[in-house]
Image 1 (cartoon, rainbow, N blue to C red):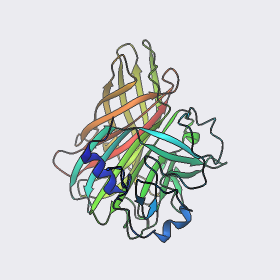
Image 2: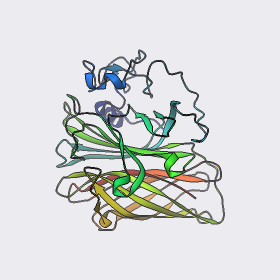
Image 3: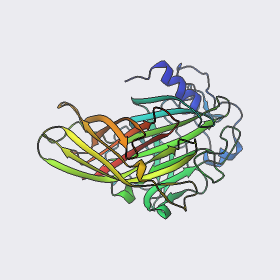
Amino acid sequence: MKYQPNLLAALVSAGLLAGCASGGGSSGSGSGSPDPALQPLRPGYEPSPCGTLYGYPVECQSFRPAGFPRLPDNFKTWAELKPDTLTEQKWNLESLVVFDDTLSSVKQVYPFLNNYKVDVQYDGQRNLVQFLYGRGPGQSNLAAVGHGGIDVAHHAINEFAPQSPFSSLPVGTLGVIANPYVQGWNYQSFGVWSESTVAEKTMRIAAISMGNASGVHPTSGTATFTGKLGGFYVSPAGQGSMAAAELSVSANFSTRSLTFASSNTVTTRDLVKATPAPNLNLSGTLTYTPDTGRFSGVLTNAGGTMAGSTTGRYYGPNAAELGGAFAVKSPTTVETFTGAYGAKR
């Protein structure tokens, strides 16, 4: 499925697909002089007709550092990925939410599918090295707030990325990324990024599910998948925070339905203090057709203030795992919860 023009424009201005909307040499809002703060993270990029990202040339549909070999599009499992190997992952599913830069209004919500890719890399200790367009200095995780196995990566504040409204730490762009090795996943994972853009005066949250998608799934029986959910929450008052939760999904392969339920949701702004947020626990019933492993449905929060769509799919052989992305919002306030999830049997 191709992006519609308005979705491409949103991603271009977000700096996610700089210059790729037209396929020509124009650059997006990330163009200009290279940012010195990102220089250590970007030793150089191959020339590309797709423009620039924060002043550095990037390839179409990929953020590939120079010197890394081009990878075949045949990722199968995290177990077979050698340490310090850069892999390309297809964004199988994504939700994109666009706010103004003060989080006082929601401009648009885009739940959609796509075929673009993201570079992912872990070192020999299975620590995150790169995701999307690089890891930020001082990578951490959410272990202190009860959700180990969810990494937090960020870039420093610079002329393109002001203080993140989702953290009290001095960071610009901010990512909440599941670590598949810690989670025990082998076929999928997820990542959620928030980014401000000074020129456009917007804040964007992109939540993606990625991995070895499979259309093969059982046609009878049941299974319970357990895992994690993570993302970014905007309160009715317009304050942002990171959020994480436990996830349980009960699948009935005979009726092609899934019962979705997250629990133990907490929010944090400093990676240290966990604020219990049971009102952000999500639930819903999802369904899919016989000829596909892709499911969808509506989620609502326990507080009864938000609702919105989720799209997910099975990953690996015989529906070994599942993952997806979601965006729920209030019909009357700016309250919004945008994120992604992953789980295994």
